[in-house]
Structure formats: structure tokens, C-alpha cells
Image (cartoon, rainbow, N blue to C red; front, side, top):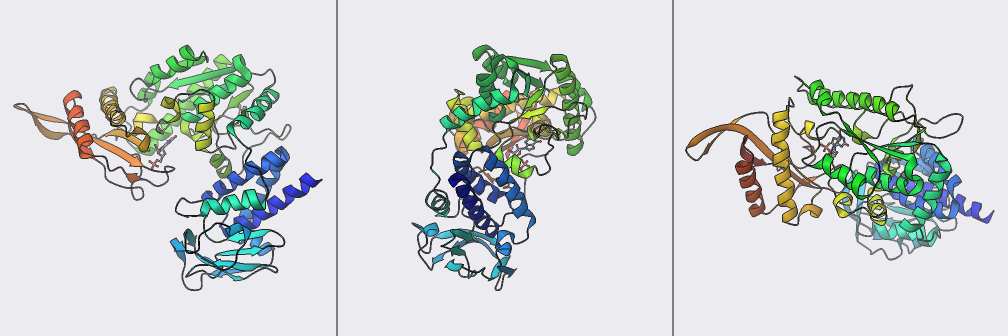
Length: 497
Ligand code: XMP
């Protein structure tokens, strides 16, 4: 009973903490993901569903718990507040303990509080916002108008820690080791003696999942790697060598290269290319899973941000288990046919990317996989603008390999979010020796980013750019020019298609 009471307190606290920080945004979801991990340790699984129910309720309420408690909100009186704002602390409350007065917090709102609910006091303000933080100390309910979860909020993490550890009394005892100790038996219990299929892409999520499932259910796991022909140079060989030979995790290698490139013949529109690749992935997946199966379960590397995004997830009405209607977006596919429905095994669904990386490391995955740059599902096909041909693929693979090689040699790989080459389907004039050339230009794209949602072009030293350019022009026959993309996102995107 005591435990139950504690859980309710945390959920309520979370509720009021949440809507003032604007629950509709995805960033907030991540804040509360951190909290829920702590509360899960205290509360167990049942808490998980009450949290999701509460979150979905809050999302539907304009003004959220704040309104439910009797407060009112109006459009911002002076002006909306976006960006960095120094915060003035008016009252010493636990939530703001060790937060420096006048430190920067990140604001992003067009509303402000008109009247506070009963029992609440203003505890902090900014120049534009009278109620930047509020508290009902007796009931331990708190609200913040700023975003404590964003990196620009100088003491944002202090606020979250105060809330989770001091106020909600959660212990920081949720570690990779405890996650493994809890998750492995849970997977075994869920799967029983049934067979599980995993579509391995070689990215950090599916690779970590393969290691985790291999540890939990061993031979009941079948990994399937579909080579659509748009991987980077040496990648299929590396993956097969790594999983199959080195770690003895059985991977079914499906060579579907010809099928995919044939389907793309004469197609140049980016969206059409993506759709065709997605559709063909489904076809191959369907054929191969029935050939290798039957499988009761499909394992997916769904992460916590995906869970928050996927409202309306399909649930088997009989068993309550989640069932797949979509393969994870990495594979860039729209949906599985109705008669090919799997139950899902998604042990990473409470984790964020950095936690998956830690888990992967604890399971023995090397940096080469854990720290690898993100790579889109449609692969090099969306880095060759317009029509994709074998000749262009080979050319891009060679150029891309040089980019990665030089970035790694310069020890820049781990500082960069993504570094890659793009092939433009136009010819430019050049001169080599005493001969005129007429060949493709390569675009070099290197960006820094936290999450891929926004990005800045990387300020790579000129000598490295020069080396990359020289090598590409000299070593890749069909290329006579290299340009560097200096567009941030927004307005550009990271990929070119
Ligand atoms: P953009 O180009 O939208 O990319 O700025 C943001 C991030 O998403 C990756 N990306 C994809 N990942 N399937 C994926 O799994 C896709 O179809 C896809 N398209 C883009 C991109 O590489 C970057 O990290």
C-alpha cells in the first residue's frame, strides 16, 4: 500500500510538472522518460501502463493538469518567449535547490499563466514571464514554464534531479546491469520456446538487440540481413563477418541487390524511390520470413522516443501484446501485410539512444558498431540524386569510403554526427594532366547534431577537406570535382533526398 501511494504521488507530481513544460512536444517526453525509469524501479511494470495512460490523458487536455487543478492560461501578455532567458528565483523551494539565480533557462511558449490554482505560489520569474516556476510545497506539486530538458538550460538537469531524487525520493539505482538482470528473464518469459525473427540493419539499435536476444534466447533467434545493394563499401561483408563468424550469432544473409536496383530503373523522384525501396523491402521480408519461419515474434529495436510518437499502437485484444503493423522506420517501410502479423519483442522500448549505446557496450559490442554514424534505411540510393545505377553506386561507394577513412584518420569521427558523400547527376568540366575531363561532382556532407532534428555543418580543418578532395578526385575515376555543403538544418536537411 505504501508503494502504491508513492507511485500515485509521483504520477501526480509528474503531471503538473509536465503540462507547464508543454506536454505536446516530443522533447518533454524525453524529460519524463528519465523520471519514469526511476519510478519504474520503485513501482514495477503496472506503473508503466498507468504512466502511459496518464501521459496520453495529459496530452489531450489543453493546459493539462494545470487546468484540472483550477488554474487558467492565456496567450502571453507581453510577448511570446523563445530562447534563452535568465531566471530570477523568488523563493527557495526544493525544485530549485542549487539552481543559480539569473542562470539561463530555455523558453518556448506563446501562453502564460493567468491565475494560479489554489495552494500554488510563484517561485521564479523571467523578464517576460511572471510565473516561470510555481510550487505547491505542501502537496509537492511543481510547474515550470521553461524546458529543463534542453541542453541550453544551464541548471535544467539540476531541476530534473531535484524533482526525481529529492522530491520523488527515487533512487538512482537503474543501471545497465539492473536493466540486464530484469530484462533477460522478462524476454525469456515472454517468448517461451517460440522463434523470434530480427531484421538486422547493422545500426546500433538492431545490433544491440541482436546481442541482447542472443544472450536471452540463443538459438531461438534468427537474424535476417537484407542486402538491398545500397550499403556502404564493405558493410555487408563486415556485418556477416562480425555477427556470424566472430560472435556466432546466426545471420541469414539475403542478397536482394538485383531486385532492388531493377525496381528503381528509370525512377528519379526522391519520394517514389523511397516508396519503391520500402515496398520491395516488405516483399523480400515476407518471402524470406515464410521461408525461414514460421516465427511467432518479431524483435524490433524500438526506442523510447518511438514509443511516445506511436500513439494508436496496435495491441492484440486477446493477449494484450503489441503487434507489428510497421517495421521500424530504419527499414523505411510503410506496413506489413495483414496476414503477416507478428507479436513484438521490444526490450529497448524504455531506452534512449545513449542508454542503448551503454547497453551495447556492456554486452560486448565494439566501438565500431556502438559509435557508428546513423545511416538511412534506403542507404546510398538517396545519396545518388535522381536515377540510381550500378556505375553511380560504385562511384559513390568509393568516394564515401575515402570520406570516412580520412575523417577517422583525423580523429574526427566521434565528434561528427554524420560524414558522407553525395553524388550529383550532372557533369562538370575539369582538367587532368593535359586532358579535359567531363565527370560527376561529389558533395561532401559533414554535420554536427544532438539528435538529427537540427544540425550544423562541421567546421572541418581546411587541410582535411583538401586531403579528402584530392583523394576523391585522384582515386575515383568518374569524379573531377568535390564541393563542401555548408548548409545547416533547418533550412537544409542532412540528406540530399
Ligand atoms: P534529414 O535528411 O531528414 O535526416 O535531415 C535526419 C536523420 O534521419 C536520417 N534519415 C533516415 N533514417 N530512414 C532512416 O532510418 C530514412 O529513410 C531516413 N532518411 C533520413 C538521416 O540520415 C539523418 O540522420
